[in-house]
Image (cartoon, rainbow, N blue to C red):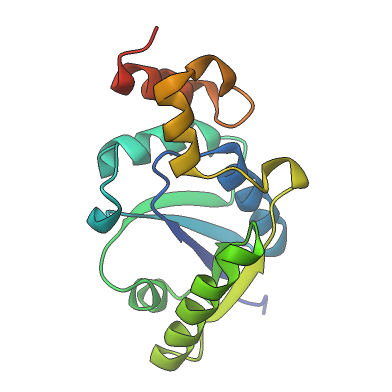
Length: 165
């Protein structure tokens, strides 16, 4: 009898999705049989894009990754993962500054359910300094420099949000 498929959850706000997020996703796809990208509302971050827009911005990039699907994250991430039978949560680490927060979240998730592991993945060095927040800030000033950091569909959506040509 074949072993059950190993599912990982890649949670995040993805406001908007960047090449760094997609790099982490591709890495996770090599490690797990299936990866579910869980898009969180996260109103505390005051997202620029609605959750529906963020889900739509991700969709075109999943076609090349047959073992990926995307859903809206509702409730606690660890509960969401448990309900879907996930064995791991994927988290990206860009810099040491990310580690403290991610470490605290991983420990809390372990306390809530120690059957789900947190796996930290680092993006390519090309994306160490890329974040959705920085991308939005740069777009407000000079959207012409963002093609290295976000996919074309995201760049178009950002320009539209900020009234850029």
